[in-house]
Length: 104
Image 1: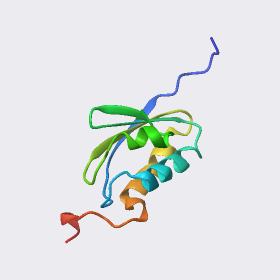
Image 2: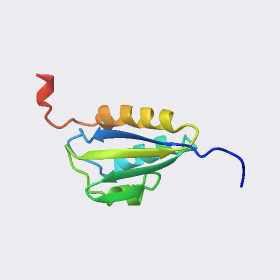
Image 3: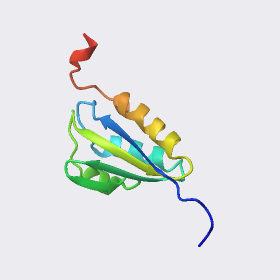
Image 4: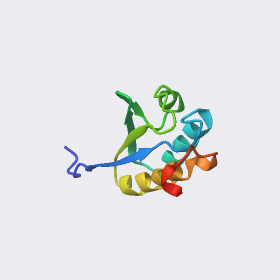
């Protein structure tokens, strides 16, 4: 036993808002962001859970526009990781956004 307390899991729900969904470029952006942090990242959606630091696993989610995903991070910087990813999702990965009726 190491004597270190276990880190609690932090969760956050996000929505895919870019028009093309999670294709290679947004998946790369997620992984690039996640790799700046030490915390583990899992992403759940469409009945699957994948490693959020793996482009290939992320692409298997086939998450199109409007898909709800749950980000789950565990580690000392988990909250900061999820905040950074939430910002990327909200910005649509700097791509064209899908139609948002709430912006009218």
